Image (cartoon, rainbow, N blue to C red; front, side, top):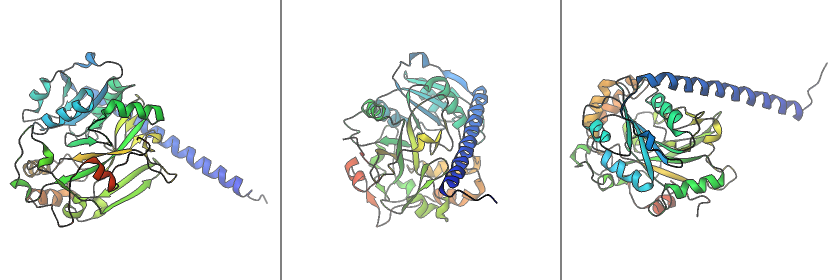
Length: 351
């Protein structure tokens, strides 16, 4: 009777398991890339200025709908950070979003009336644009309600950060999404296009976060914040707050679930597992501007933002009721150093 050879046989079993997992993820990545190739037929150019993209330009990709209120601040912020070109998919907006974007000289714009959910919540469309135009560039992938900040962001633009990431051999940069909210009922606030959203959204939850590392993609999974505290009955249904918004793109890369995780898995290894800290930023989430009340009623009827829309009906109902998300434990928003001091972002080795 043959006996096991102890640790050597265990290593062989583990190696085979890892090989099977790697092959499975490779097939998944190939399927997602194929979806993006097919999805390109749903995109119709409105203003294609991609010929102006130069080598080394930092690019921003977004899929959005009815975001005319947020776009002036969104575009101004990312231009200040050093984004040279925006590649945007408009998913059949009914406000002035399309006209506003079409008039911007650094925006290339595509329109589609196809289903957002059926396109992997817009990822199929933006993945195609990244395949076509993002290869070799540092690329941001964003929602219109996400404002990226990172250590020293006021004085060090994105090219300084990406130069350091290149020198360190880091192909991606992580940021936690931080939900911001006002004090008082949501609909009682006032916000106009071009205003500073953080004059309205000046509070956040500093605690109540959980974090785990998930196999087989090695991504960090953070949940918590005000949406888990107030708007959802089950914390396990809380939103995933970890994202990889900034990646040196290769046409073989693909996001798996929004920008929460990517393939190949090495892109997700943005943490230090040796007891230190890796650099990270924050996506300041401006979701809870007063327009969210009306938007929630519309999105509840459209059923495009969740795989199981019925499970989130109560979530929309609570937003439609214009709640006050503030509580005595809420923390007022300060500068990046205060956010770093609370452990929400890190300089890591970037001094």
